[in-house]
Amino acid sequence: MDDKRGRFEAEVLPHLNAAYRFARWLSHSPGDVDDVVQEALLRAFRGFDALRGSDVKAWLLAIVRNCHATALKQQQRRAFVPLPEEHDPRDGYAMIAATPDPESASIRRDDARSLERLLSALPEEHREVLVLREIEDLDYRAIATITNVPIGTVMSRLARARAGLKARWLTEVEGERRGVR
Amino acid sequence: MECAESLRVQAYFDGEVDALSAADIERHVEHCAECRALLQDLERTRTAIRRDLTPGRAPPELHARIRQALDQETAVNTPRPNRWGRTTWRTQPFWVGALGGIGSAAVAATLAYLVLSPSITNPLLDDLVAAHVRSLMPSHLTDVVSTDRHTVKPWFAGHTDVSPVVADFAQQGYRLIGGRADYLDHQRSAVVVYQHGAHVINVFSWSASRGALPGNTTRGGYHLAFWKAGDLEYCAVSDTGWDELLGLARLLRDLSSRDDRE
Image (cartoon, rainbow over all chains, first blue to last red; front, side):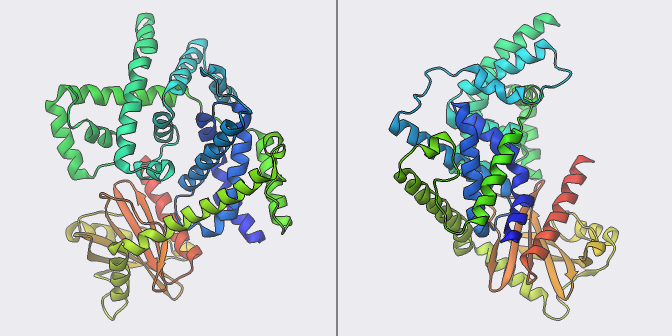
């Protein structure tokens, strides 16, 4: 039993930060993120014996996504927390505030905030593939496993997510920048 | 409006195509202004995201909570699905716990399915095990016998379609004993042969192609560990224990990622 715990800590816990980041991007209410991640880690621990795949990170993130969906369904059914109509940009900002980049000037921070906001405004199914690809640096196959769709769907969602983000991001931020330079 | 090649260009940008397709796409991009612009946009979006969004880290309190929950999980033998939660989990009636149980069962079932299903349907697994067993027959193991990676690696260039990572991990217990060419999945794959104790480990490698790589599995008493590195797919086959097999897989993967960075 201790051996299982040891292996779990060595192989799964290193991906805790990725699980936390992913849950943050999925969730609209930051208060639930910790609960979702904790539940996911416990489920992962219970299912750890069955894990034979080499990609532990994708496996864990798939569980995080399931836990998020379960939590969301419970909330909706019980109407404990009404879903916000508009996304609060501070929700996402808390995530980068945790480790401030020492060199970041205020311009950089403004960029980050508007990029956060634009990313958060994407439809969830677009946002998650983009986050998994660009922030978690996962390949198509891992993303397909996590989001439970065929690779072709990953590719088209990724394309639409990037196009959607680019259209807004490049006009909003890069446009202003070009003026400054 | 949109170029029909845009998804392939995106796959090229994401490093998801083999060398042959990559050359093909590069030729296309030379002639297609739209796809050139697409590549630039992809690059700028990625740069912006990776530059500006500092990776978040789980707060220390969460680390502590999870360790505590794991402590309880390992200490108590009678699981009560409701006990670890904070506010939301705790204030909910018993059926939420019951649902959680069903959820775990569903996760377990899904995992079991993911783990088992490729081995039921994938002919590649049979090929790999057959090739491994064949290699154990007298004088089939290696085409080039050498413990020197500088001998084995160039040999592949003339005999196979791929150039996998080759290294001697004698210090870690995996002795390089040679290389071999094998026909697998309609291409000439490279096989690097290691010895671990009394066991032979064949490490097959081939160009990454369509379709999902099977999950790690066991066939006829042989363990098969799969992974992907760069544009190659690898499979290590042996009758050693999982730990030994995955240990070699880890060493090779680390080596590939080091090579990539250099």
